[in-house]
Amino acid sequence: MWRLLLVLAATAIPCRGAPDAAESMAERAVMVRDQIVRRGIEDPVVISAMRNTPRHAFVPESLRDHAYEDRPLPIGFGQTISQPYIVAYMTELIGPRSGMKVLEIGTGSGYQAAVLAEAGVKVYSIEIIGALARRAAEALRDAGYGRVVLRSGDGYYGWEEAAPFDAIIVTAAAEAIPPPLLSQLANDGVLIIPVGPPLGTQYLVRVSREDGRTRTQRLLPVRFVPFVRNGGS
Ligand code: SAH
Image 1 (cartoon, rainbow, N blue to C red):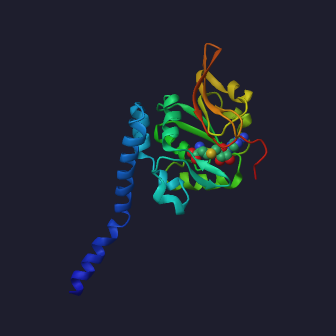
Image 2: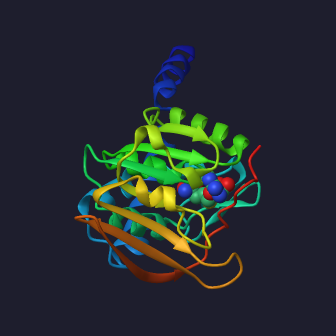
Image 3: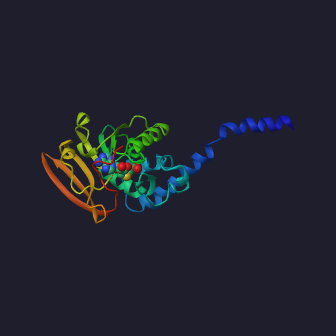
């Protein structure tokens, strides 16, 4: 009897944690099918990045059961982790490929940065709230995305030393496009940014540069937290 119990205990140990991983993979498969593919996301690189990135590792502990729902979630400091579909949509817009260099403004939880890293991109990300930047750094490291390069500060100025970028993704709504970001785009680069007033209608805007000429397209109405200039700590 004792021997049997010991054997059971010993075999149970290596399995700990595995059901959780399997469960979250299953939840992501449903999320990708119902929220991402059904709404028209087609890029296989984006689909596989959304399927593999553990969103639950980037939401507060108390909200983990809701991590794969079709909505943004609060992450503290009045900020949010975007709805999965918006993350997939913005990621698809830049056409992520291995070896690309991408700047994200607004690290927040670190989830968008993780999705980009999962797509093979070299990610630089800036967050203005120091405490969020520190928490995102920890979450990214713990989830195996330690190669994402993070900085705490005002993303308005971009990241001059690491420029030019193949793409820049801004995840907070600005009243106007910050000129330093445009100047840090590579030739043929693309900038994705929500533009509009904090409480009014905002649009996701795509700015592309081809042979020195700039083309701006308004894509869809969105609701993002505001791009701030001096809220850092
Ligand atoms: N991409 C994030 C979404 C976070 S919400 C995620 O995947 O979770 C947008 C974030 O932008 C907030 O954390 C906010 O603090 C940050 N932010 C707002 N203005 C900023 C600025 N000027 N520079 C850098 N980050 C900024």
